[in-house]
Length: 367
Image (cartoon, rainbow, N blue to C red; front, side, top):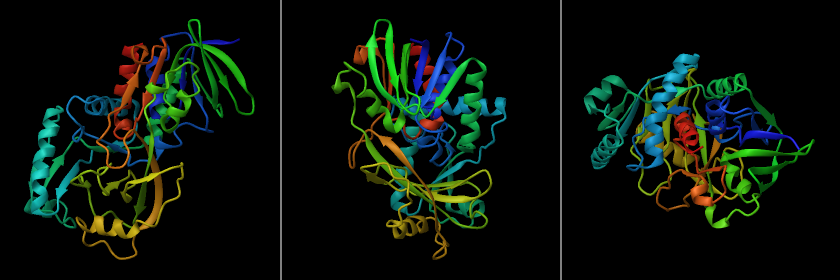
């Protein structure tokens, strides 16, 4: 039976970042991916925003990894010539009753170590973004946008240059803990099995399913997962804004609201909304289109009728259900599940992309 030192299940941005960090530290590193290519689901179906680390609870993994990951991501992009733009983001209050929320956001940002937010008045906003309707805003200069595919492709290339191997179309069917590691059984057109000393579950939407295939793993260590779909809509023509526009978050909603982002080609898109679903489905839902118009026109009243067209959707692997408090990332080692050599990553949703390099550093530390 073949033996490898490290196996990573999942070639999304988290699996690739971990592979790039760990490749070369041991003899062999294998990345298993059930799809035909890397990063085809959550990692490529999001807003492509480099987040600043503003919203997350104090001392949470989301806050810690987002702030550290942002710095690491900008540095990585510069060193590896990954396309990005540090456009900055406006978090806007559209009426005076929302302005106290901006104060709360500012306080939370400072608690998380983000000290560059700037107040902007209605008059300043009118000069900066004439199409924007807002009474006040916070400007986040360290927020940006990135070519997510180029970033993931670079992570994979760097990992492969240090000896890592990506094997696609390899769904995991069964995992048996054995002496000094795990026996992994893989399906697909050419089933095989092998021994690995270290096993890292970075399966994203499928992390819980993968965990249930590990013989002897305590099921109580596996958190519930909730599929939370977000739809995106685009408009044709030039973007009405030169910065990212985010409304203040709505209370008790599992997202940051329908915001306006710009891709590197200058195309504007709006989203995501929040729609809990039972099965993975990437069709763009039109049933909430009237709510999209309503939400967007709070800060962009000039949005023409019939101007929104379906763009794409993404699914977040959330650990909280509808109406539940915000849940943090969960990263488990043997101190939690009692299986030496196993690292489990659950609920790596937003700001997971921004946090990816920091998460990889953390996994390296755990090992």
